[in-house]
Length: 114
Image (cartoon, rainbow, N blue to C red; front, side, top):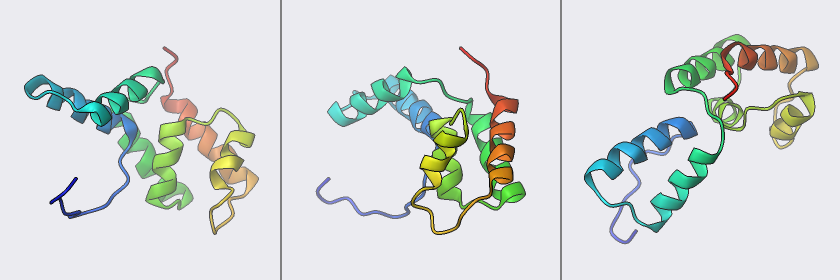
């Protein structure tokens, strides 16, 4: 990416990246990296973009998670406490078991099996 400047860096849920790449591919041809990313994102179940934003907002307000962690949780869709523990393993702040169970309850409200 010679000649490109980073203007803003922000974590974005995978579902929004997928939608953006799909829209972009309607008008332009995707390069190799974009194709690989789109293929990867299409393989796994995802929340809708609206649901992903709602979940991220709930995780940030109700539980007090950082935006980056909330996005990782939405992208990975952990199924149990052990999956959540892996996400929080390198986080500087620890989350209690009750808060992890609350996170799983929030995810269960929005998850629709495909």
